[in-house]
Length: 351
Image 1: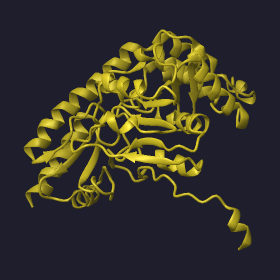
Image 2: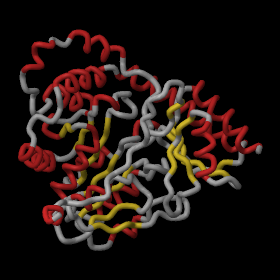
Image 3: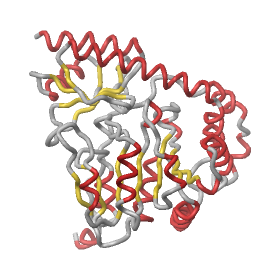
């Protein structure tokens, strides 16, 4: 058909499965196994449905202000979007606007190359080393911007703040985006660097540590100038991106710091226990500082284990890609869920 010649064609991002059947142990999309803060449910019941006839605040002011208080910043340094995917997508469109390639790791969040292709942004992959770590020297070449997750996804490897700063020092003329979706599970944030680097944008999310993946809340923190540029692009195609309930419930989640810290601590404790149990079963993995493990068995392929777990009603994530085809990304669930996973893995590796 002649009209198809003008269609923008891309290979889309493939998200983790969302199984509908009951009784599934779902460890494939890094959701938090615990509910949001108690105040979120209370606030949900208090929302006046009559207000839903009105457009929401385009600046998500109530949420931006709460985040600013929490991080000790100005609301004008906060950009709120519909999940961190929305935030990063807008950041790609805003800041990666040259003929030079954007740099990001070869083993990383698989949405980055999708956005680059969608927006016709040139990019170049920088290989992680044998331990899945970033080599800062790779980011000294000419580029049109840099992005990487820290901790990395899907490996869970955390780079030091010193490593992040080394990359920033070498790239004062482009925007450097650090995707901290998993930073709350034992990592050190690079937010303190914001006062020294106007070109640093830090992105975080409510989907993992704050147990609100279903509400789609993400945010970016940066200099007032960077945030202003983001808003200019956002308001150029959709002013009312975040609905009112998400704004109100997100703000409520931020207020309950004690619950937040308690939940993150439970996940980290379970993660460290699972590390020891997996090693007993001859699995190896990088030292994860996220809410998941990236594990491979010494003798059994990742695909074989993935299939065997699925047959037992346990979903994990597997990519049939170079360098990582034998690895499984396993979300840290409750202690009970992980017990069942380990029992299943014991059966699989014993055959």
